[in-house]
Image (cartoon, rainbow, N blue to C red; front, side):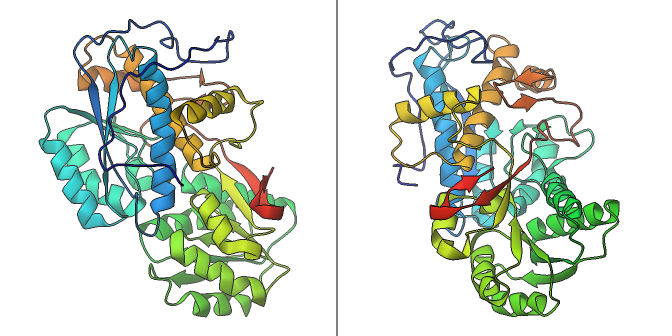
Length: 390
């Protein structure tokens, strides 16, 4: 991403050109209706994410997508007359830094909720305190079950889980008649979640147990893992990897088995990753948890593109940026339902009224805390020039 970003981002209620809202195009009733003057000042959201480090491109994309949505809302007067301030701190995808950021947020009486904090290891480290304090923990960026706990009503998950993504890939392979599947998984909490999801999906599809290999976070054993799995002569390889481990494994495996398709999860699908892989990415299948960001036929994508442009973004819109935008849109809908001057409890209650909500081609259906509010998963293929094809 080439967008400017500061550690702390305040989204002012700046004046942007209004656009005609077509009936049904936007699911949020507050857009264009709220008074322009804030009632009680800005409402602060707090976010710890990776703006630098091995997964900095992922965190930056989602952060900028959310900024686009909040800036668009603020330009229209905010929610019930209150603008939204997104206070973001970089953790570099490191647990100690994420926990330090988290402690600062908890100590800030103005922090209304935690928004879109990133990473399975970081979210897992935060969860005990999240559950203890009851602070709203909205749209954590993880597909892991560790944030999907029975009774945890203050934790609201949107994106489909890693198990959902793995199931989609395995079902696709089973439909194609492919049975010899291998799995490379990262030796951390994220990889463990993917492994469990793949094992469940394979068992449900009555496929043979996959051959597996782990890859350390520093990717030092990526070549060894690629060689190990290549020797099993798989028909397809699933990647439970993110960041450098995914890139190094793909680079190592592709020359060994050029005819074997690699299936990766959404966390690999950033433009920076695809560009870094070059020809090694071509033909790779990647599951996505939001629609194609270039498909303006989908109303929520069209809204995103306009908000992205209004933000002054010069980078090409990505799946991750669209996901950040959608997360912010859902937050704003819940905040609207929480009423004027909402308490945290009122907001949490409002999140669980988000049933059968259509944002414009993307459905939200809040049921229970152990389930994601979205089950959207589709497979895309990396084609020429790194473009995604459905």
